[in-house]
Length: 162
Image 1 (cartoon, helix red, strand yellow):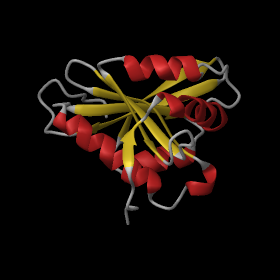
Image 2: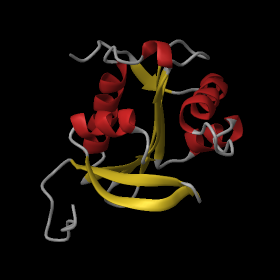
Image 3: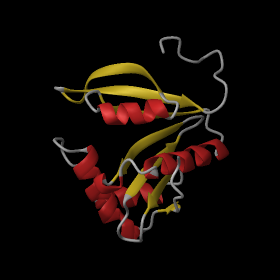
Image 4: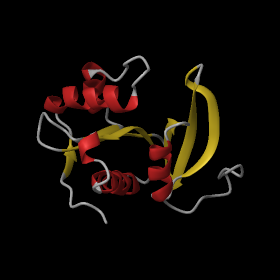
């Protein structure tokens, strides 16, 4: 069951909270790259939206989606640990997917650490399929998995290695 969420576009007040969630939940054990300045830069990009759930300045979930020529790329997505498994992530992902559909995206691509079974299961449960494993994606000893979800029927150029 999806949580009744109030997703909104992030504001500058949310940048610090998003960066901290990224550092603690996504980038743990890796160099911290998504610092507040990078989050703010992403917010200013015309082909990126940064969505959050939670009060201004204290987001409890966020997603950063980049829109490419025909596809969307979910760059970062996290839900604070105390809010996980309550439907919040599912609701926010559905919101982001709807925006991607409205923008005309054919599919959404996302990556996860290979050992992050919770994230991989979450995306699989929401219709994403894994199409490649990339050794050393995050650093020499941390492999990644590429996932995608088609929002409209795949054309003849779709991957045959899925």
